[in-house]
Amino acid sequence: MKNITHAVIPVAGFGTRMLPLSKSVPKELLPLGNRPAIHYVVAEAIAAGIKHIVLVGHAQKSAIENYFDINAELDTQLRHKGKDELADSLNWLPEDVTVSMIRQGKALGLGHAVLAARPIIGEHDFAVLLPDVVLDPYTTDMSVDNLAFMIDAFANDGHSQILVESVADEDVHKYGIAQLSQASRDINDNTNSNSSVKVAGFVEKPSLADAPSNLAVVGRYVFSNQIFDYLAQTTASVGGEIQLTDAIDALISESGVNVTTMRGDSYDAGDMRSYMQAFVYFAERQLADDK
Image (cartoon, rainbow, N blue to C red; front, side):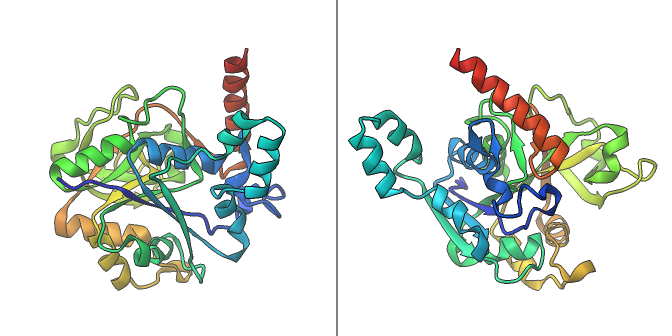
């Protein structure tokens, strides 16, 4: 049984879609309600059983690493003032969970960012969570749904897993779209349950007429360690970047890859309009819980 305990979260991007908010504050630290977006992504990974999280960033993103560290001076001041509960809430990472950070060095794309984590991940199989995507924690159980489901599916059949969700026809051109194998065409894309089936490949941002399905990549992956070898052999493509999709194509042809349909809803916290909608939703849920 292949147990996934490591995860990679690429956080090196400048967040140009979120300017001017992201000019001096990393986009991953912009709030959704009363917590930064990255908090929910890391909490999702922990709920799914991840014990070691590797943040792949650059020199200007040290504030993200600081968020997951203990501020000893602040902790002491809060406890001196009798605010133990508040101090405890800031140090929320479980004792058995480690958060590390490694620098990408050069902005050579998502594939290069994932490969940059190899010195820490080592020979482990691992998950990848894109921090722009925040899954709704209020309508799903993160300990069994989505990423947790993908980890279990990988443990059962050894196939790498990629999370997908149905998108509206007018949005198909914005995403990487899954091309299902013939035997998988009857996949259940009901948002009330997860299901996992083989995928034949992906088409990047197709027109609706050329789209092989309406299943778009969400931003959650579970990979065999073999993906590192493919990334290391992948040559830079358009824009001089090493594309994760190129390594996934190699993985599909060599050992097979599955897509998992997502349960619940997701929010693009890296897009201004979607981010504002997500902020309102998270804030309303938290205000309701405080009543």
